[in-house]
Structure formats: C-alpha cells, structure tokens
Image (cartoon, rainbow, N blue to C red; front, side):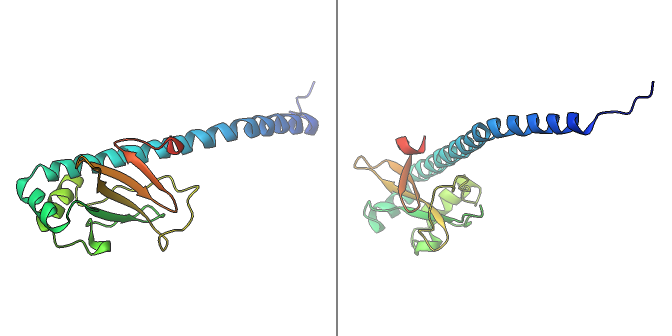
Length: 163
C-alpha cells in the first residue's frame, strides 16, 4: 500500500483548529504584553524616583532646588513614543539653571532617561512625545508622573487605572 500523505481535507481541518486556538489565545497574550509594558514603566518611574532622591541627598543640589525652583516642578524629561529619550533631564523645558542637581540625576540614571514602553492608549498630547515629570508632594518628596493626555502617577503611588 502506498503512503500518499495527508489529504487536503485533513490539512484544512488542522489549519482551522490552529486558527481557532490562535484566536482564543491572542487576546490573553496581548493583555499580558500590555501589563508587562506597564510594569516596565512603573519600574522606570521607580528608577527615576531613586535617582532624584539620591540627587536631593547632595546638599549643594538640594540648595539649588530650594532656592531656584521654590519647590515646584523639579525636572522634566521627554521620552518619545518611538522609545527614544532625551539624554539630559530638564533640557526640553529650559530647566538648565540647576547644574549640580541635573548632573547628579544624569549620573544616577546613566545619562539617559528611561524609555516609556506602554503608549497604546495615549493620544498625541505633547507634540508627539510623552514625558516623565518629577514634582514634589507637600512633604517635599519626589512624585514621578507619566505625562500624556492624562497624567498617571507611578511613584510613590501607582494610579489604579495604570495597574
């Protein structure tokens, strides 16, 4: 008896079963990837928060912030949807008159702002870019916010809609 292989009907049935399985698994896989990207952003915000706190531990940098910025927005770093980021914090907003602080933050971050990975539900709210924004809370502690069309606090507390 000759072995002719699989018939066309058998191959079509196997392909149909594989397509049904892929259609059932794809939404869960997409949710898992999105959750992973949001988790990466939260970790990046923690890195920025640590870098800013470390820089504020330097008395010279802290004095610069206290006198020149008055406790308002400390620093902004643009990170573009393509994943690239500015190398120097503050350059995009003109906050360059605090050299000790910026040098400490850049040194702690390896001279590169962390990339924003989850941009799926964001609209183009900042001329084609999203931004990390670090400000202070009433206690003087850094608060890291992901600025898009909506601001998401990622450090020290994570907004519920970003989890």
